[in-house]
Image (spheres, rainbow, N blue to C red):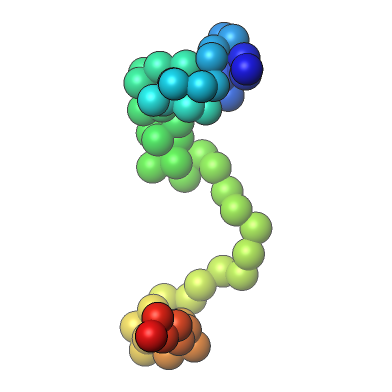
Length: 67
């Protein structure tokens, strides 16, 4: 199956492609750079610095028991 690379739009093979959904390592790293530069945004609530300092977020999360 052929898909379009989300960065350069070049058609690339999905099966056996170690860089999928990208066509190459270059496009994969380019996308990583966009994430690192905050060019992509995800919807959600803003996290205040206060929440991070008092660890409010982690106290609301429970690790599931695998046993």
